[in-house]
Image 1 (cartoon, helix red, strand yellow):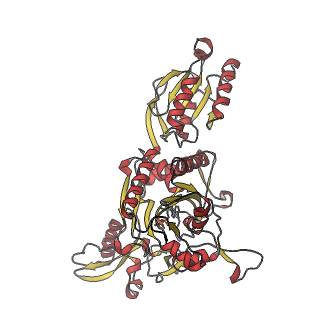
Image 2 (image 1 turned 30 degrees about the vertical axis):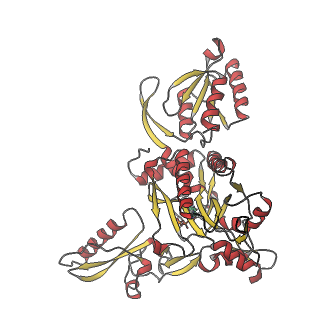
Length: 509
Ligand code: ATP
């Protein structure tokens, strides 16, 4: 795991590594960037594609009960009325009237400063790992500055959504330190657009805030044409858009992101709890299979009173990011809410004919929903390491390494001719490179000394380097030096052995 001294440092280090190595850039950077939008560079787009492909392979190709779907991003606006998003997909927004900063009321906290049992004022803090400590420290500062005598009570932390009008009139804005905050109001997070040449109420449409509705709206189509029978799932990977009030923590919360969602349709009387449990296990195992350490994963069960009204149970798989333990993957038992709603709004039955009971039923749904960008960030956090190593002359130097799982690493192998001006070495290297490229994304690097080239590949997360050296061309056996990223051990392998290893560790992982 990473070594920079603090979690802030790790995020800063990662953001700069991402920029330097072409993993992630701010969107439209030459115009100053656009808050909440990002671009994936040459290495990042490969990493993201590999995560997406691994999920698709395991979720769809390697199973018999799940089929794929690619629905449109802009759907009929009625979809979002039926799903409840038009009325209810909102976050509580708070404005600072002076600084014009905006906050999510559920991410803004406050506490009364209570001295000798009397409320002397209020302090506020944004959500972080240290919210309580920050509020306590601010309360102490408040007491000192006002020269208040007596005992300060430990702070009782409250969400801004719970503040009374009297409290709102006294709670300081985090931006100005003065009571400049508005009461919370609902802010719908869907991006609106207009379809067609007219821009009136009849042309309003939305960029989808989740991919899930595509699976519900196409449920009948898939049922009628997909040769499927209950229980079965429909999976989709694609962009979603949310006008987040406070995009933050790099790609963790952005306004345009990518989701991988699957709706698993089951009989209304099926053991939904067991099904939910088995998807929870599947998702955790999958995250571990692409290299996330178990020690960084945990579960958060949504308390009954905080469940969405249609949900019977929601459990989030949490990841320990440098900025705190946060939701990575939500697994919800959504009952038959969505299909019932679409049946009601469209007038088209959303039913499955059960041969045994000869009855038509509206299936229930278990939904694992995860963000690709959040997985990618978790993968980078877990893979990043800095180590002291010795170079060929015995000098200690720092090596930065991304210990990415071979299945998702952008390059699987780097081919390195020992010297770039020796025709025989280059010829053999190019030949191997061409063969490998037909199956894998492979790097070719002939610049600088071999140690430097290893370091470059370590930082890009390339699991293996293959060096074509004099032994390759002068000794029998046509072997190369295979250097392992993690152990830095070097062994000699033939071309056939190299392909067999990649087959085992990449294709069959
Ligand atoms: P949060 O509470 O963090 O806003 P959510 O519970 O609203 O997330 P869901 O609607 O369950 O999220 O979406 C499913 C998954 O999509 C999340 O678990 C997360 O991985 C991803 N996701 C949601 N919102 C964002 C975002 N703004 N940026 C990146 N990924 C996101």
